Length: 147
Image (cartoon, rainbow, N blue to C red; front, side):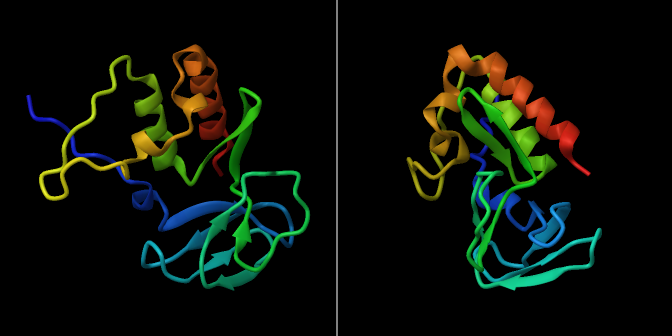
């Protein structure tokens, strides 16, 4: 059986669902390169905002954001923390990682052992077996929140 290649977070960051700072509705932050500049566009109010970088601040109650900060649209309280995802593909990948009963690390053929795969960079509370059911419920809530 062939092992799967690791999944990296930047795979999901080309189009991120964010909260529009003007109207509070769902907007899309799109950028052509994983770490380049991009633009937020809101279909509800027509707001457009360019940013040189994208910093997600997963605190839905936070009021003041600096120029490059956005609140993820897909965010929900979970296990005393905030569970968030960039988009529906990210939710699906998280669901696969969290729902796995056996998590095996694989060695990258080019770079060897690495700590950059999404599964090794998730917070401990997301991966904890005692939180598995609650995190999976939270991921279902995120999926239902998508516009």
